[in-house]
Structures are given as structure tokens and as C-alpha cells.
Image 1 (tube, rainbow, N blue to C red):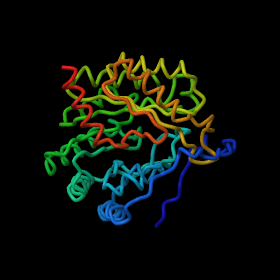
Image 2: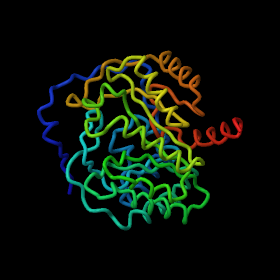
Image 3: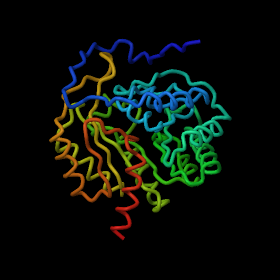
Image 4: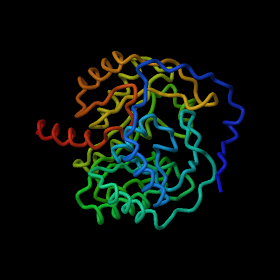
Length: 309
């Protein structure tokens, strides 16, 4: 049975924001159809959810044609209603106790050298889902010992030290997206807190200095350049290793309005500014997303750490 898309009451009466026509430089790449459908088959056979599908990622054809899929655990329904996100909102179902096994099996079948695990927000759970992350990581590591593991987590706001459970597992990259500048949080990310996200990233690095920390920014939401630079400084103060910067693409007329499209030259300028701040790695382009080219980026992170030591 098809699931209906549930929206929070706050989203129902939102004004209609016309979607701006995409410029020539924002174009999804064509897929290798055979590999694309193989990835899709493996995802479907294991009854898994991917952020590639749920968030309508513009890079899905390119990534799936390389057998790269970002798995979204703990269901397809989020307890929050961020104004930029296309993942459905509502009351989530119970956790699937077999999901760790299913994920590890899919990683094996896809022969992934690097895997990214993300999730919906699960504010309904006492630990925000941190133990489930732990179980998934352990299952992947047991079945796929040579696969590097990256997690893209919620903020675990008001969950105390629950996030620490994830760090007990053997992971390689801990990612939590800051998303936007502080001034826009109440409109763009009303259920989150800017300094809460910064504190999470800072504490992760304090607890495990070997884990690479990573965070992402969207541009085109109405932010100013000096605000973006301040976020870069804040992330470096939290000892974040890797920053991704990508174009916000408005999912529908009911989502947060797109202020403007950044030109590729502007992304290059932001990349240079971020590099000058001391990040180990910077990925900045119109189609950059948190898990885009994550396998290649992990290899670069390792190389850059060795160079700096």
C-alpha cells in the first residue's frame, strides 16, 4: 500500500513560493542504466530506504550508476518539518530490528568500499536513535570489515549524551550538517539550534580525535557572504575537518523559497575562502551534497591528514 505524505500543521498553510528556473550549470548527469537498476534492485530487495530517493537528490542517477547509495535508517518519516527538506513528516513507525542486517547485506552486494548511513530525526525515541546507528555500524563492520563507514546524523537535541553511543562503534567519518546561517534557523530549521549543532561536532572531535568530522552548508536561502564566512569560522573553532557547500534546490512551491542560484565562480570563491580557514578538505559546487563522491573524498581526507602530520 502506498504511504501518504503527511505534513505538520505548520506546513499546510505555507505560502506558495514559485520555483525558479534552473540555470544551465545545474544539470543531473545521465546514468549507466544497467548499474543504476542493479542498485535499485538491491535496495528494493532488502526493503531499504535511501536519502537519494526520499530527498529527491539531483545526483541519484550518477551515484546509483556507480552503485553508490546513501542509506537512510529508522524509516522514511521524520519527526521534524524543516522548511528545505522533502522527506515526509509525521509519526514514524517502530524501528526494524532486522535493519542492521539488511544494510550490511546490501553493502556487501553492492561491494561498497565506503558507505554513508544517515537517518530521519527520531525525536520520539529516548536516545534519538543513537543505539540503532550503533547496531547498524557494527553489523556493517562485521560483514564488511574493509568498508569505511561514514554517518550523517541528526543533532540529538535534548537527548543528553545519547550521541556518544555512536562513537563507541568503529566508524571513520562523523557528519552532521549545520545547513544554514544562524539568522535563518527559525525559518529554515526551526526544530534545531545552531549552537547545539556546533557543540555536537565539537564534542565528537574531543571524544575521538581519529574520526574525521564533517558538516555541510546550503546556499541560496537568503544568507549573506559574511554570514557564510562566520559559519566557516565557527566550524573550524569546533575542529571540523571537512565542509561541503552546495546549492539549495527548492523541492516544491510550499518549501522555503529559493533566494537565488549561485554561479560556479561563486562556489569556487567560497571553496578558496574555506580552504584558507584550514579545513582538511572542501567540496563546493552547485550539485555538492553531503554524500556526493563521499568515497573519493574519504581517500583525500586520509591523504591530507598524512600530509599535515
